[in-house]
Image 1 (cartoon, rainbow, N blue to C red):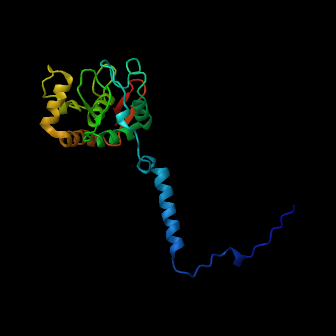
Image 2: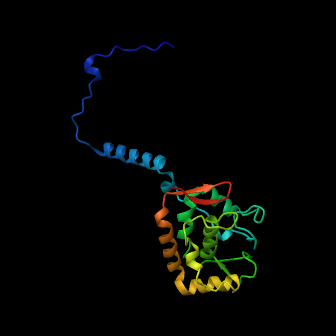
Image 3: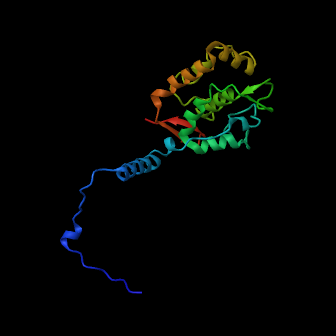
Length: 196
């Protein structure tokens, strides 16, 4: 098959557009905007969907992301894979009072989605040596004043009674806001760190 090329004149190369911007131009602009949004800001364009109700049993030792204690927490693996996008997702779940069925934490009579979001978020900002990666006081400010001598669920229930789930979320948002966009997952420590 032979392809023939027709010679172009100077007039052929000039664009002739005497029409007003129409629907097709608006569609082109929206398509361009969508393309930029999807590829420039993929986190904003793709909503994270992780079902925290499927967390499974969390070991009483270590952090949720420690494989030696929690080798089979697929929910945690999904959140780690999401990178820094996991942080606003977990914050958004702090007010969720949906009860999770099954045994999640030893000796806890009931665990709610917001509780799990808190524990994961807290652990995600904690090093292997159990030091917060956020500047003082970090997320510990939310629970720091409560009686640590109580059992875990009683101490956490006291925090929820004192501040409410909405108050906990607002407190966490206020603590994290100055570092927005500066979070990086540290694979060696398996936690988020704040970059400068």
